[in-house]
Image (cartoon, rainbow, N blue to C red; front, side, top):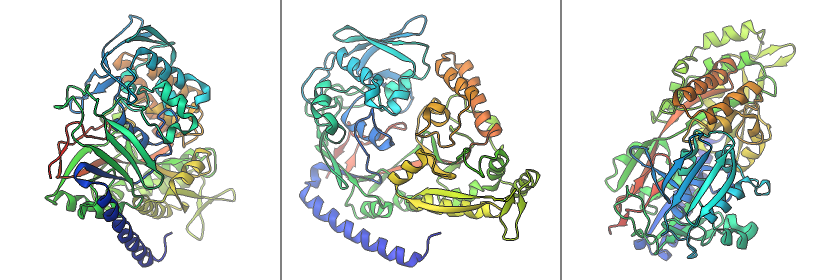
Length: 534
């Protein structure tokens, strides 16, 4: 539990004032008339998309790179990107892509099929130690260069989500000359690497990552009014761990936008005439709680089912999110392919039912209000990220679990320490979210290959693995939907691996001095059409 809240508030205010003084000093040096400043709460570990483990790396890639295929921000239709056309063989094992011939890396090299061969082969190379990118290529077997601007991707089996992954994040082209010249430093200094509208300039660790306009950019997509170089000269992505400080910076105009804002401030920002609020339904699950089924007491499926009935999601949404979220029912949101409607309200809030399940499973209530079975107390360590909304949610869950005789010991950790611990299975229970935009996230979350990563339940089930693999190769939509529904039934109903809590309604604020900013529902801020008006 957090103690001495008054002292914490005073320290936070002092820190905020200190950081705002830093904002003023830095902005005076940064020529604010041609610079857009965006605050982010989490510093990425790397900008090497093949080795990244956080969403922030992907988000920043949309400044410095472009995808092979685009997904239209309004219709979500797949449209040409760096490839002006593509086709798939009758057996669905070979995809052919035809590249534009007028695209250039930031170092002046022409983008060719050889660059994509290097990009995909780097992902496949075990020495790269690729993370999400290795998952995203699915059953890719080999890359074949047909000619200077044409290449084939050969798959062992059909791969249903390919276009999604080509459009988002990890499969964007890399320049072999740049990557090999930088070596191990590439991830923190990817200078001249991309083909996007902005170039990487520098990364001041713990402070900022700076991008500058690509004067040679001339291949913007059809949904932009401006296909050429952006009007914005400079984007400074400032690392501000305390969300309250970012919000204060929006109010005082020291920053222009923020990757994350506190829900309590949403309505105030909406009413601010100098702030434009972009609203999207965030892909993925804003918050879920995962049990480690390898460790007692949550190795007991009946405990996990009871816990699902013990959590009042409405209370969490109203108290923590100020109503800015929708209840989650499973590992994917309702607008994803194959969402299982049977999960809606399957685990209704019902503490009496939770108590009944635990009674029937032999967990007897102790004199101290905590249940026991065979001499084992119903207790566990609850590892939680050091962020106010996570901490508040954890405290509410701790109380709700306590009402049915489950004792949680909250341990608050910084992001890096938390992920190191939970990836190794050092938790009984934890909170997490995912921003994945496709139902194939099942592979990342529940396949046994994802041990040591976001398979936080630490489930290893051959039949579940088989289903997850089958949905990846099922190019018939109806067949894939049925497989996905069965996966969700196993995950949520049969095994109760999670308590899904809410789906985020995400707000991206932008100072009105910056006009024409677009927010892609599956990506981030896009500045191709933006300009500074004062």
